[in-house]
Length: 61
Image (cartoon, rainbow, N blue to C red; front, side, top):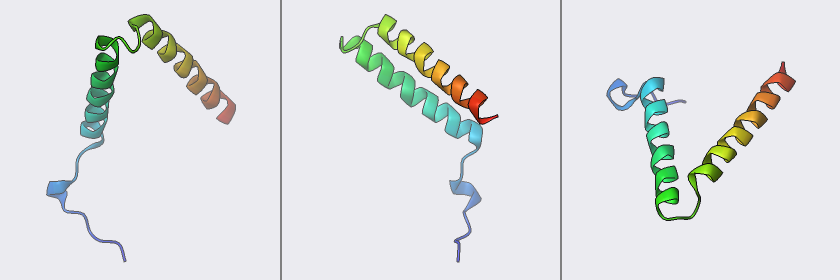
């Protein structure tokens, strides 16, 4: 049987989304600062991935 969650230990969707966004931003900044990728490469990849997501959403409709 499922265990009941303690409301004090749960987080809202907004908190989870914010934490995830901060983590992704920190990783991207580190990669750029260390010269592993450039800002241009990062933003180009963002556009590419967003386009792929949009295609998948349209295909699923």
